[in-house]
Image 1 (cartoon, rainbow, N blue to C red):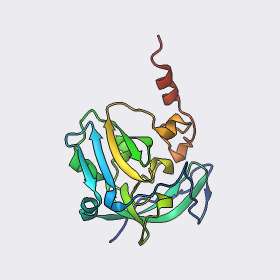
Image 2 (image 1 turned 30 degrees about the vertical axis):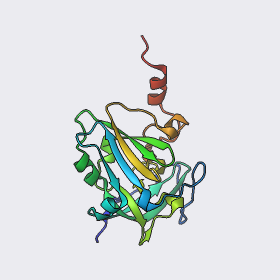
Image 3 (image 1 turned 180 degrees about the vertical axis):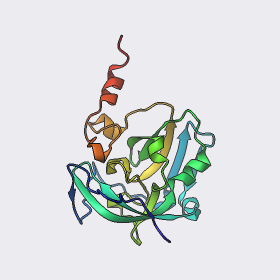
Length: 206
């Protein structure tokens, strides 16, 4: 299968990053062990068709390879990564988000969350990735299924993916409540803190 190539055509290393050939393993807390036979993806919230997928149903969906660069907020970047999985647009097409749904809370086991604008999620290079290269994703790297959103810092590509919750308004997830940026754009170094989140915590001022 010919991969979708979403690597930049010119400048590839965002500011403040260092290129590495390794793929560091970074996570908070213990690595969950998820049996694919018990894995579920729940799609809920502001959608026309809420649904749940099991592993067999996911495996039967059309697949795509993606060739991309990945950028971690801890300042490493890894070029030329090939992921394989189910295009996110397949999930969006089945769910049919409400026209007022502009954000998505991404859920990962055991109880991690991160927020993503729907416009960032709805891109051709984004995957529910089950493989890296020709091998199944290991638990250390988010297997059996992780989200891959190459154009954002990699914490937005949630490991151990379990659900998408569609929202009418933005809300901070676990990582954003604990100091990470609400958007996470590597090219403008949106690493830590966010004026948007500070305004949300303060509430309206008059």
